[in-house]
Amino acid sequence: MSHDTLRRPRPVKSGEHTPEARPARRRTHWSRRPNPLAGLGSVLWLAVVIVPIYAMISASLTRQDKALGNNALKPPTDPTLDNYDTVLHNGFGHLLLNTVIVAAAVVVIVLVLCVPLSYVAVRSRTFWAGSSFRLFLLGVAIPAQAVVVPLYLMISKLNLYDSLIAVILPTAAFAMPVSVLILTGTMRDISEEMYEAMALDGASTTRMLFQLVVPMTKGGISTVVIYSALQAWNGFLFPLIFTQSDGPRVLTLGLFNYVSQFGVNIPALLASVVLSGIPIFAVYLVARRALVNGLMGVGGK
Image (tube, rainbow, N blue to C red; front, side):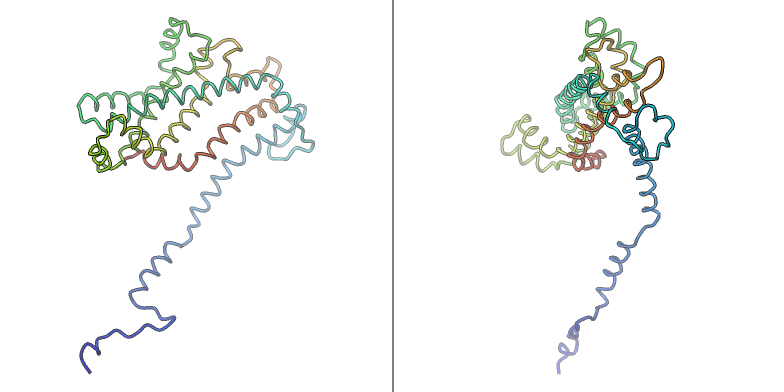
């Protein structure tokens, strides 16, 4: 018998594990090991989020004369939809329309300006492009409260006071720095070889932007859309300072309709909060995967 025959490995029988397969099995075992601390933390965080939402919905179904006497966590004994009927017949449609207009306009302005700006910041290697990008990001550190008085003077001089434009322009301006930061992070993940391949095909800068960059950064764009829409939807300071009449009033200011000098209609107030949160929650459910992917790419390479 030859030496090759003696050194030939013995066939592995059914059910028998080779030494090389044991480490892989051990790694699989460790990867599936339960983590009770992470599970407990997830349950606690879920309770922190769910309990206030449950209490808000439960209180919105309670009659006004029983709102203050009931336990917040106790289901209403006599649920009613009168509070939602009161909200819907108290100008809620007008407030919702104004809020949708403001949110849509802010999203359009942010996308039209931030996508090309982020593209230039990523692709340009000049000193002025880098300096302008860093200067632009200083807006992240400037709070809106610090510049509300100069903004008020500017809007008054431009005769834009008490209009939706007076709310749209500052909201879009304060949403742009974070949007640029998100978009530049996702655009940096596009490999240089893809740009070179399109350049060899004779593609112009504009064609690269619309045929390469925009399709490859859908996650970041979705994140920017949701972020800027949330900024406009939940904005309170700019509508409060830059509007006065009922015409340009938005949902956040419409909550004052249920507050008077004699008391607060708590069930109707919470019912309006529930109704105002449904549209933005629906948008989040549709784009949640793209939102997570966009946030994961903020850091760039």
